Image (cartoon, rainbow, N blue to C red):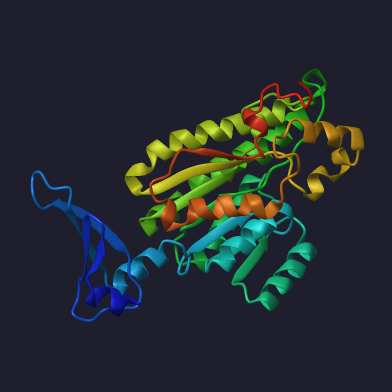
Length: 321
């Protein structure tokens, strides 16, 4: 097809199309770029030059959509959204290290991934503990020879209760798990991220960082802080070509929300405020995370992308007029 197009002159009313090769040897893959040149000042006829690029240009385009040769750390990667992220990144060619608190669960998942052909390693770590975060980064640095292309801060938890009923311990748990871990892991991983000269950090936030949700004041505070940390670091680390973004889900089908969504009346209320009228799937979050890690998103930084079926932008939209 490329040879036919390059060797013939195709005429469209008022236009002449010239197909030119950018090399003496035409390749089977090409794209078309158009440039219109007027032949005469008063003529409605024009010429469109169509240039066929070489295969190297196609390869460069394809490389924008792969993570081959990239290293990644995903926290909390054995279940739910974290598991989907690990599998998405590994499926795109990345070499991934993940962590979890449960050693048995981690070992079982690593065996599953190994059978699937994914390049995934793992270690036991509770990211709410600073000393264990430091040990995790040492492990990752050793495994990836001091360079880390992707950091995904996935770990997070929630305690649902009125704000006045929170204990000091519960407040500390949410702050340490949701916010301190993100801040400190970014801080610890910074030398490895900078060493790659092109890195991406993605944190899992929540729509609670944008809108008010019942009995989630403390969790919302941690997610709002992650959103602003994302914006601040995006500007601060831009000089190092490290992009910082976040993904903010609404209700996703994971074990974390099974109990609250087992109430059918509550579930119907969730559907009623979600324009798409359903829960999200972990893979619908992981695909957004993966995109933000790909070279194809190289001009996106400081953004918080809601993966929420439209919940965060939904106003009063009654089913009955």
